[in-house]
Image (cartoon, rainbow, N blue to C red; front, side, top):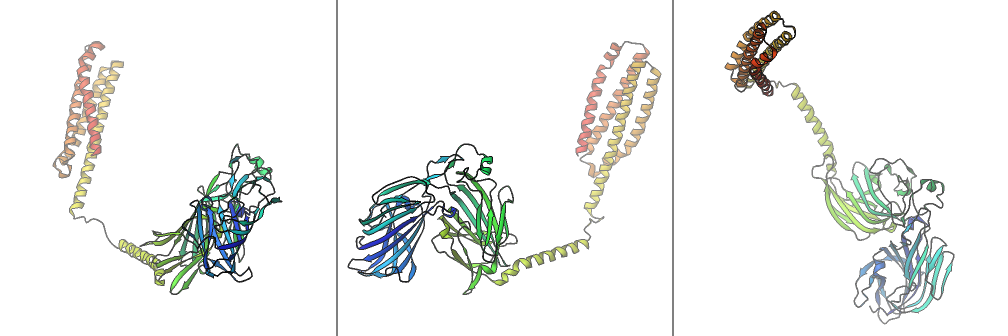
Length: 596
């Protein structure tokens, strides 16, 4: 189609509805076109042109077709992106497919609605808590069209009357909060007259960098919805400190572009509603509603200024019968795609629909193009996992909050899978308990393992007795040492001899007790590992006992001969060294035996 064939008479209204936070970061353009075909042949499509910079922020486009000169019936027309030949590369084109060919001399009216995100740029980019927020909007006074335009008018409605500056052309005027350009007549194709409007806009720019919605279906009567938000205030950044006192008591002039609450419009009969973040549950929320709607008002832990971020999670349940239906042998989930908060612009939205385990023949019907794929999620009592349908789309606005459908087949007998698993699980548990209570699982007293255990227990008891005897012997050695210390202090030789005699008797009694124990260990096969250490311990203790007795006799003899202390020390020095070494060896052997 040659772009000069149709001639347009169109009225253009750019409507940035910025007085409401629901449209705070959006530019909504509504174009009324009355199209007349003055060419020779029929026309089946109409092209729309947008600068590439503007097309990047195009979130939604919708075309309403009205027959005749605006008084006929209306219908929605498909609009798709195209790449026609011979057009400027700086432009992006969309094609509107007419329901029937537009013959020569015929007229139709097209009502075109476009929504752009991130088209308002804060200027200055940073403000203090007490400053107002100023933004820039850039566009063209001439509607960019690939066709010649007979008459055109542009109106820009602003959220406030404060306008810092705006581009002025002939036929331009500012009336209260609306700037009008035109009318302009006989505008050539691809005419572009740049305009810049600098104005006050204190509405917060609530942007969700990412929103993940998980919709889990339970055929036991519930649809559980969980939404994970990662929000940022996309307006002018905040510089300087934050004063909570000024914010609370002078909110009308302090932090005017911030926000401290959001409203989620949930479906009717929503229940089990919660609101929390990474720290835990947040109590600053309110719920109210009736049979037609449910509203949840949430308040973050702190007010959100330009550039500030917050993350939180909202969850709620919905009655299954309100959203799940049957059609042609399939189950159909019919639920909204977008965000329940109309004031939020979403950069990236991921919707996950978790279907019951065993769902088959899955398909999705969405009112606009989305990226789709499937994965598996495992939950409690799942065997093969639950299929998850994932839809992803960027640049989401309230116009995307439309219903989409997920079709799948599901056998009702699969509902009995988890209850039967629980029933049989508890049944076998009780059977196992009964069998355990009535079964003798003790080891037979005639078995080799039982006899070996008894023998090892006897070996351990015997080794413990040997250790006790050695400990008593060491205690007797301490008494001998004490008697020598008393001798050096008092010089009472007779008392020292009596102590030695008593010690000698005790050691002989302990030796008698030790003899049968050593005989048992030597003959026991279970003691083959520990017997060498026990034998070495007894030998070392006996050798130390002899050295102690010899040193005791030497000291007593020196005292009877009235020798000096230095001479006594010289005589027993070598003996003392051997006794210390033997005592260390005995202690080490006791530790080794304890470990065995």
